[in-house]
Length: 212
Image (cartoon, rainbow, N blue to C red; front, top):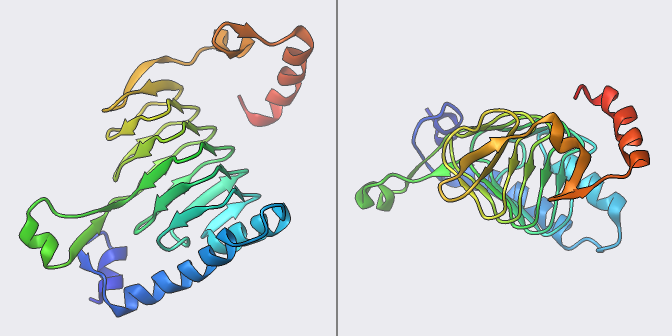
């Protein structure tokens, strides 16, 4: 097997010239995105569509960093804020209507524990899956092999090393579930600050189309 075939099969691999050729294609696109005029939002969206393996209406605020791009499979309306990183040496699946706050990161890449194996150039990837309607807070990190359920909110600065069930508010290092997100949370937009009745009516009208 080639190293690309080993990588894509989930086996340990060494980044050789064929692997680096794929890096270079991605970095050329990232160079265009990260040097694009800051106010040209349509160009940002067009480059996001070209960079990501699968997406619909994705928005990336540069700078953004990834390894390949084609391993990122996003649903509708992904929003990636400034200075985010996705190390996609294997598949990263992201559902609909997800948000990544500034400096958030998703890592599928890893290296062996023993230094001799690392020095020999071996590395690996473990896929990450993010459900629908997930908000990853600023500076949070999703580590290799993790699955995050639908509608989770991950607090800023968290390090997610284990799977999170759907509808969880989770925080910390290591990240743990703080509590479930419930229907009572719908009335509030920040801590104890409530939406107005008119705003709640608008949210309720939009809610039906979201399946929430």
